Length: 420
Image (tube, rainbow, N blue to C red; front, side, top):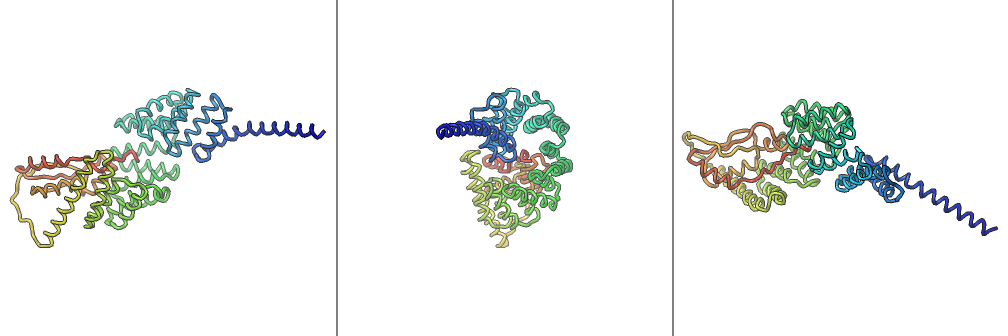
């Protein structure tokens, strides 16, 4: 009797365990789907367990792969996300969401060539989906096709008036056209749909371009509150402090930005703050760090060129300061015919050219706007009007052009319009 009871219990236990095993994949599938975008750290192990259970196939396996890809996308692990979207498409070739999200992942990798066909296929499979239309619009924006980009982004807004990314995209188009008031309105719509650090950051730069530094400061501070570990807000607030001549606060912000994300542009900006404060020995290491960080992209020749150039700027500035302290004055010269040998919105290139001309004994004049302001505005708004010109006497033109041509190097201020 005892043996029979024991066998019965064993049978019941085996059946219970089988039920648990059958229930476990269902629980993992639910956790995988419910947390894919909002809580990827929960979703990824659940999705992996469901996929690896061997009990999913066809559309169910494709759906679990899609959800895990979305979770990886939320963690910015784009290569793993793309592999999961590939698997989802193999399991269900008409799964529009897989094409849509693979388009998004390739866009974030700046691989527009792979992103475009996926957006197109997602639109064919689901013409009412707003996100792939917006994605195609941003691909066209990146290629400079602003007319068709506008049509796509406007269509995306019509399809989904609550798609915040589409308003950000339209704001970027307004910025390209210099329509900062319209861009501010679109960023306002983004922020009405929900707190968004990038929305505050983008609107802050629009206020900077309009000269409304108080509003810009408030937006950058909101961006910092929402994303305290993002360097962009500190970099933007640092620039506002520069415009308000609050150099010590600006240095603190650029210090924090560089702790979070060592970046050549931020080293340049902090270097120019030291430069304006007259602390040339502190400026030099920042220019060197900026040059070194670019060298991996631009080649080692950048390092070998800009380090001596930075020292040259320092030595020329020291010589000019000593001359001023000694009371020496430059004698007046009669009017001469001037020709433009350099036009730039890059403050570093401008000072490098000036120092080089001075070292060669070539007299020059500079006309145009504030080079520091232009450097930053062209970083964010590359089509912004107004640049500085260096002019020399006609008889010095050939020598000056040859000298400046030898110093020609890519601009240290890169276009960041895509960040908006």
